[in-house]
Length: 307
Length: 151
Image (tube, rainbow over all chains, first blue to last red; front, side):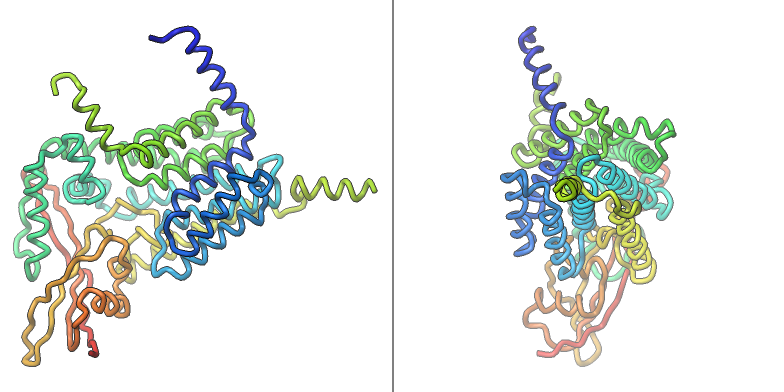
């Protein structure tokens, strides 16, 4: 099935992918992110973000303008200012648009500004996420939070059902328990027993350890000075995190913005990492916006031997 | 002429004299927002999901695990439970339950509401136990607020 001509085609495609100007591609990836995440919602401000993102994608000269990126950052800032609460992913997106505004104004050619902004943003977000999970609360680090989340959190229910972590009957039982407590009055006089499946206990343990390891490593790797060994493996750490977490969790906005920032912070000679970030960006886009990722998981389960 | 050209070229290539700390401004902004969110979590019972707290899916203090119970206070002091459809996770009152947000939520969800109401905000928790068979679900009261609603 795999022929030499296919290898040549892949090699040519890879070479072409690697030859893209990093600055131009960073701006285009971010424009796609702005369009799909904010252009289709967030009211009038989102509409303006969408229009500016389309302008950036169609007109290369406008795409390089700091005025355009400043306009996108300001539109989103206006929305967040007027909103009762600002979702943290929106604030990360806004910070990244601001970083691109600064980079386009100050140093578009050499890319040092872009790299420093992207690295510090990735490092700070992962450091905060790790601090919350490992230092600021006991809920996550003892594994109980993921056990509870896999059973009761609406974000995970599709994944737990389709991967077979819980059967439909088990899911219905814990859902009834959850709803029953909401509908009752007063506090629970005795804590209620939960029929937790063993598969959930195991999966939650693995997810807990993996999340702590990858988020902690990403925070350290992106904030470490360049002479440290961990700095040199930062792309491996971030790509591993993106490839394992965002295909199971439906938080694609974070996946897209991290892939864009990861791409933007690469050094000129890190061609392979840059190509992988590019592939990751489009894989997340395809997985969540064109395919339904959890449908794919279910199809793979059906194809698995013994199913 | 040459000066004009070099000036044009420089403006196209950026500014060599920009402050070196400028690229760190976006990250510094996130640090400040994260610190403010932490203060809000500790002092006002907020969640780390919003306002730059990057603690999503790390603690039970989450809009996904909070719910309301609403009671109407009758003239004789007794209370009756009000049927109340739980809001989605983006509801600001689930994040930080101020009286203003609760009043607005109550007006949206119970259009005929008038008089005295008591709103409880609860949060789920979990005691994992030594084995999965010992696991227990718990709830904690986050906030209990009495509101006066005019017709």
